[in-house]
Image 1 (cartoon, rainbow, N blue to C red):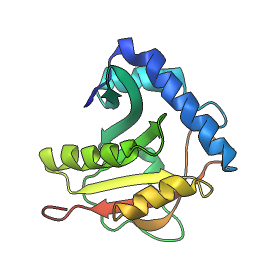
Image 2: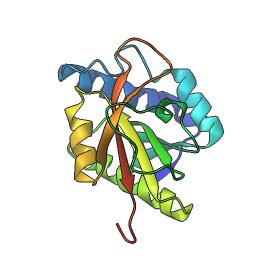
Image 3: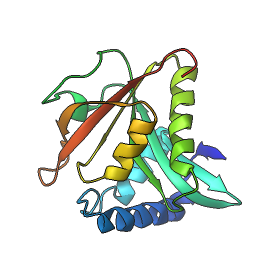
Length: 171
């Protein structure tokens, strides 16, 4: 089941993020190795109603933030361009603690459902160059590599590959 996160979920959310952080570190990725996303990010996203959890048998095993509106990190794109300038949902902080069970795929499908339900046909996402698992997930869902963005929150390891998907009718 996927549902909006609540403040009661914060410890489990942090555990999922810590598990994902440790996993991507094993692949040599520097993404999230500075502690991001921080506790404050999760609380902010819960307060805004944009953080969702994947729960199975009472255990939270995945998280994702779905944010509508302009993302300041996506204002400038280098080495390419966005597919269009239409409204979009940004997918952020997608993480799972139980790998190999299709939870990431379920969260990606959920993101598409939310976008469609709200009349938005574009999704954007970014990931580190070293995060091959996320790149594979995005490619398997039909996301196109659009270029490079630089995160505003830091100047260290802030380069990200930018992706976009335009939802078609039924896909």
